[in-house]
Image (cartoon, rainbow, N blue to C red):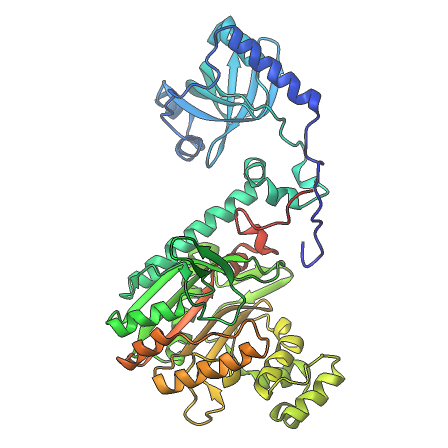
Length: 506
């Protein structure tokens, strides 16, 4: 898919005709009239297709003879091959597909007549025993068949040929039904999240939950979603980040905490942005951002080995090597290396403006040096950071919650991790000086009053918490959706979110 513009219009390319749906409804009505229970809920599978294939796929004929004789499987019919009084069909359950052989002599005329009414998409329960066909395919010979759910809409025959890709996202249930690769992506996503939890738990981090609705939005430079609580008659905000609450827990004595949950940002939609997204955010007392560099390398390499089986992963047209140690560049160095800027051009605001003009990068005339530096970096260097790279040297203007660098107080102790040309993580040594934090909040408020809707408002309770004393610490947030994109070679964030936000159909 890449970055091509995807149609937001309604698509009917996968919609069946009214006549096709009506034929299936008529079949359903006839079955009901004949006294067939068309939506029963008493069928109990004894095996899954994956269990059968895993256990018997390589089994010799003698071993099949010793297999259970009363196997029951349930699944959706995905292919039918009718041949008079004996037929084949395939069913798909949650993990695997299995061939079924059914003949009238084996199940009786009444059941075989029922089979003749079935369509692809119908969900059935089958009982029988295993054998191999002449082509050596593992097959379940049916001794019984029940219709469990009638599919009233025909499945698309050539799903991958749909003109409108968004149909896959709008009707994810259909995508999962007919596209095995989509199912594999989301199975991997679940595994990645489970591995993340295990990684942090084995390092003595405590998983916590903090508020999704907050009276003051904070923790990240982003425009929030606004709602209203009727009983309290107050505005609330869907959180843009859990940071300030997690750091309150550091004050309270939880020295290692993490939260894996949703954030919400009222901003654009693209192949890498969804307004509702998943992050893991974690904080560690008595650690610096340098410690988190090593921890991040350990985390990503652990996940890559477990999920991809290698530290060499393919992402789009790129072969990415996750073998540590990873490259480190300051923002200024990245602009020089990947944009061709001189040291004079990146070291002053005037030089940056000259360089930006040469590169045809528009800079607002009101931007201070720090903000301009980041905008130029994003324009000329970010997309070129394909191999894992820690970008450091962030200016204080864009880092209101990070600790100042001891050698250069105009900068903070912070990194962002880039892989495949996009940011995957953001981390810094935490600011725990309440006076400094209050001053940063006041500067953010001034920016907010000047029209910057993403600037953080002052959070007096958070400053009060710092006045009780927060231990020196470092924290990090990692975008789970982008991480899953990397480890599943998915081009769009919509490919890794089950139900991404889309424009309403007209």
